[in-house]
Structures are given as structure tokens and as C-alpha cells.
Image (tube, rainbow over all chains, first blue to last red; front, side):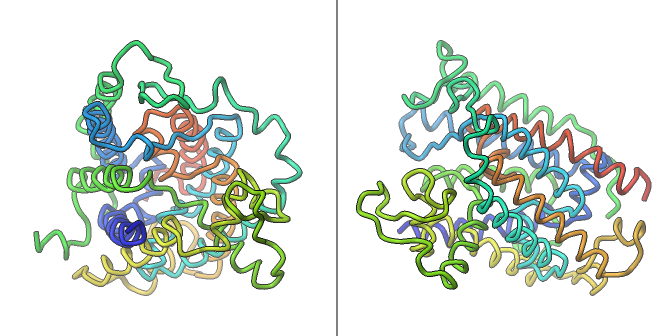
Amino acid sequence: MELLFAILIGTAFGFILQKAGAANPQRIIDMLRLKDFHLMKAIFLGIGSSSLLLFALLALGWVDSSHVSVKTAYSGVILGGAIMGIGWAVSGFCPGTGLVAAGARRKDALFFTLGGLAGALLFTLIYGSIKSSALFEKIGEGKITLAETGIESYTALLPSVPGVAVAGGIGIVFILIAWKLPKGSPSE
Amino acid sequence: MKNLLYQKQWNWKVSGIALGIAFLLAVVCVKPIGVSTQFVIFDGVIWDLFSPGLVVDDAEASTGYSSTNPYLNKSGGKYAKSVAKPLNYSFVFALAMVAGGFLASRLQTTRLGKKELAAPKVWRNKFGDSSVKRYIVVFVGGVLALFGSRLAGGCTSGHMMSGMMQTSISGYLFAMGAFACAVPTAIIMYKRGE
């Protein structure tokens, strides 16, 4: 059953990224050099609406809360994000959209994916020597959210407000940003 | 509806809502979407072909697998297990994304030219038509993107989209780090013009 979901949702997700223009390096680079906000608007709308709905479904008990999976915060998240950001801006691909673009027969995406495999291997090889460094010291409780998920292993920063209100509020702000951001001047 | 299948590109509203549905559906059905780990799993599968002792059955590990490599052995051999059994949800999901990209591009009525498939216009305007130059730089970009993502423990999909959807602090931190570096890099490298 899980594999069937993987095939269905994975294919749909790849299809959507391609149709949204996220797998087009021109659109990514134009977003990052602040020329074209099409993708930025789509991302804000996507995160805002899914967050609002997710916490509503959690509050109603319609989502198995064991499906929620919050990642640990540590300083390596910021540094890693920064390194990822450079690779993203230089190439116009991120790990997921590189795969999608390779599927859409972009030759440069194939080289991005090969580089990605090399970068992932490099990290796999050096992890043992950096794992005890300060990079991996967790920030606060580690698995922290703003909104209360109702799950014990996660710490909410705003525990006394219902999760759906916090996530819903942020979600609505994100949707408003999506609406208000100018479109920019896309080159295609 | 038919139009949506054949259009080269959706507008931002359709794109955003479709992305939101995909991220939500993934959590409702199984778990949040994440991609960058699968690069490690693929590496592990290949590596294990050449040195078969890399991943072994281990009754004492909480997942039943362990590895001589500390990264694959992390969290009770979580990645070691995925390397031993690559037909798992997350790995198949990443492969299916490739198929989704292929499908969308096949259905598209406007086809991209050979030049465009090697480098986007913004690149060609700045650095010329040499594909080799583009491939080398994109390869290096891939190294940085995946090295950074693994250091961060996730990428744009896992941290930025799935993470921020769950309002997790790690997601906001990742997005901050990524945009703080990506925007200046893109502006310096490609300038603001055409």
C-alpha cells in the first residue's frame, strides 16, 4: 500500500513541480535574482494552504499524528541551508527539482544529479569525523514547532494557543503574502 | 482540465494549490515529502555492490541492519536498512518524481529546443552557448546542493516546504540560510539584467 502511495503521490508531485515551473532553472534563477516572483507566490500559497489544512485536520483527529515528522533544529541546518543555497543559485536546481528536470529530459539536470550523488557521498564519508562537532548540537529542545501539534516528542513554542490558530494564522499570512507579492517581470 | 495537462506552465494560483495538495496528501497518507536522503541511499546501494560488507543484518540494531559507515549506521541503522531494501516508500517516491517530470514534459504541447535543454536563457546570455561549461558548473552546484542538504538534514522539500507546513523551527532556519546565500549568489553571478 505504501509503495502504491509512493508511486501515485511521487509521480503527481514531479508532474506538479514541472508544471509549476519549479524544475525550470530559468524560473528559479529569476526568482533568486528577484526578477520573477511567480514561484515565490506559488510556494507561499502552497505552504500557507497546506499548513492551515494540516492543523485543521490534526485538530479534528482526521490525520494520524504519527505521520507528522518534525526535524531537529541545529546550527548545521543554517550552514547546510546556506551551502545548499549557493548550489541552488548557481545551477537553478534543488535536489527534488533536479530529479524532475532530468525526467523532463534536461541534460544539465542530469549533471546536477550526478553532482548531487557525489556531494551526498562526500557527506556520507566525512560524517563520522564531524558528527560530534558543535554543528550538530541541537538548538533548544531540537524538535521544535511554533504551533502545538499535540505530539509529546515535539516542543511547541506557543503551547497555550491551539495549534490550529497559530498555524492557521501563519498560513493566512503566507496566503496574503502570495496575493500581495508583485509578479515581477518574468523573462518567459 | 485538459488544458491543465497540456499547458507548458500553470499560473501561480494553480501551481500553489497543487503543491499544497501534494504536500498535504503525503502527510495524510504516509509522511512528509523529502528527497535529499534518497541521494545517500542511491550512493549506498551502488557502494554496497562494490563492497558487500557495507550494510549487514544486525539483530542488535533497532532497524535490524547496521553499517560500517557511521552515517548509514545513524539512528539504529535507518539508512542502512533503506540501502539493504531500496524498494521502500521514500526511494520509490523519488524515482516516481522523475517519471512525473517525464510525463509532464511529454504532454506539454510546446517542446524545448536542444540549446534550452542544456542551459537556460539567463545562463546563455551571460556565459555563452558552451554546454560543457554549463555542465561543469551545474555538477559543482549539485555537489554543493546535496552536501548542504545532508548537513542540514533535508532540502527544499523536506525542510522548507514540509517543515514550514508543520511550523517547525528547523524549516524556518533552513529557508533563512538558503535564501540569505542564494539571492546574493544569483544576483552576483547572473546580475539583474536579462
